[in-house]
Amino acid sequence: MPNNMESDLNRFRKIVRGKIKQELRRFIANGELIGRQGKKVVSIPLPRIDLPRFQFGSGEDGGVGQGQGDVGEEVGQGEQQPGEGEAGEGEGQHALEVDVSLEELASLLSEELELPNIENKGKKNVESKHYKYTGIVTKGPESLRHFKRTYREALKRTISTGKYDPQNPIVIPIKEDKRYRSFKIYNEPVANAVIVYMMDVSGSMGDEQKEIVRLTSFWLDTWLQSQYTGLERRYIIHDATAREVDQNTFYRTRESGGTLISSAYRLAMKIIDDNYPVDEWNIYLFHFSDGDNWSGNDTNECMKMLETDIMTKANLFCYGQVESRYGSGQFLRDLQKHFGEKNEKLTLAQIKDRDSIMDALKTFLGKGK
Amino acid sequence: MYVNTQLPSELADAVSHLEEVARNAGLDFFPTIFELVDYNQLSEIASYGGFPTRYPHWKFGMEYDKLSKSYEYGLSIIYEMVINNNPCYAYLLRANSLVFQKTVIAHVLGHCDFLRIIIIFREQIGKCSIRWQTTPRSYAAQSMK
Image (cartoon, rainbow over all chains, first blue to last red; front, side):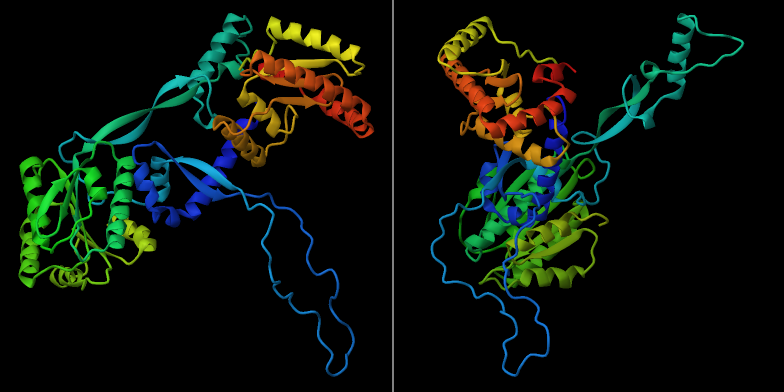
């Protein structure tokens, strides 16, 4: 597109981006997006953005009174009473449909998040970008102007046009002489990382609780994928027994049964031991449950496993507890009691409702952990 | 970016034929210049309200976004766009079929006649052409610039 349309359009998109950011919490709590996983873009309806304009006020009569007034005189008209209200006939506000890619949404999620404690282990999978100024180009911002090269071009031109005077060697660069530094993006492998998601699908987890877990792990997943290429992900669901499932099943299963959290941990550790040697992989575990473990014995076993096995191998263990009507939420308290409030490798989050998903994400992946 | 807005021969023929027909039917219009554009360009012109250039503002971007999207979704097509001026400028959508184009051309000529005769538009012409003379005249000229 020639002329200004491109910049007008970009400006408009920026405004839209800002609007989305404002209402991100609402979109994150919206389960519909999970279904759109395969597709690149999602449409988000936003209220139409109106230009500011002058409007007439409603109070055309009445106004500020003057003088003393008599006893019993009414003061002003008062607020207008809401009318009876008939069915309206005007059309409603048009919604603005905005296409955003999931990645963009995830990056909007927060530029603050980061995979905590990531270490340079076994350089293979996870890549990070870095920029290096290597080339020279003829166009660029003045701040990147390469003085020497520009001078050289100008000198060449001056000499070749015969204007160079050794007595008075003034060389004035023109636009065509200017040379600028240009950068190239290098992908640098930093580390291998595997993420294991565990979800409690037992009977005490209601549909709403499962939905919250799915949403949280979905956004975790989406965000991580948008930030780090080449992460490995494994999914485990458990009730009284645990099994590994694929991503699709993880997001869709509805099951019921008792709860034995240790089963999930055992399976997770088996997967890790079999496939991901600790000295080559960064290991992250996310576990979601309503915290209603079936027996104290099992909880004790979990603690033992966490302490002796998981914590020594994993970079981070995140436990997200969803509040449920039936669950006692005991597991979170047990974890707190056992490991103390501040443990480097343990992050605990309570997810009360859909609105606190965002907070949970921030707790899990907050910087400066 | 170079944009070829020239009419292909069959459309140019159609224009001259239809002009003749229109004049015979008693229509009186300024010379009318037709340009062929694709829907992105047409949406752009339309969102600038027909002007070849406007001050920078995101509202044009919003309008453009709306127009081009509703075209992409098949919800709306701008068939024609006439700039009330002397000479008149009119834009044809490249993707339209020949029959459509002919209908649009005839329709546009009607507009041009109307625009010339109606007093309120006649006043506009003077004002517009000042703008028009200080800015590049046509989409093609501007694109080349």
